[in-house]
Length: 199
Image 1 (spheres, rainbow, N blue to C red):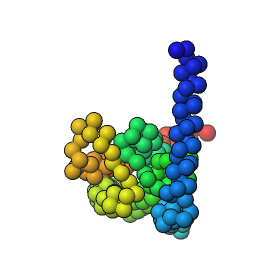
Image 2: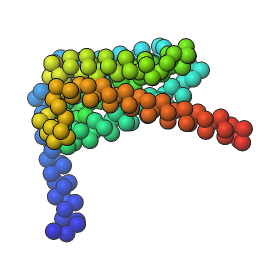
Image 3: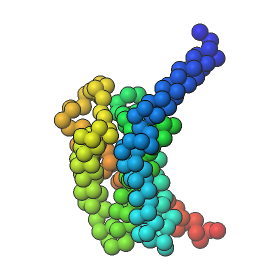
């Protein structure tokens, strides 16, 4: 099979998957379901809270931290959904089968406000992030699993992860990402300070 034929086959299959996802959304996840409104609320509420409490003097720094969290969480979740490791049975828009609610609003806002709190008050971000990541990874994820808003598929076992520890893995993953993003933000702040005198 030639390269162009493979591309065309992939496009046909992707179009079919998109059509199926749209049909699924209409049947199970549209405006008539409580899950739709739950997800929509969890997009709006965190953004309103962020707007109310963000430190306007450090606006771009804090948003940079949150944007970086959002990008990493979205790429990670998109990969996991695309390869069938996890599913989000309910979504606000069928075009975003990954969890737009969690990746674009809840997690970035939680960690942005945590970053702001710790850096404004001189708190230990490493410890505070460990606590917040534990609540999110162990409690929040478990509640969403019980409400069938988040599913971990059997395929996840190919990674040789123990099922009973999957929430712990999510907790550790969130914590590691929050620390990496902290370091990236500090790096950019350092670069900003060094280049400020040269402009």
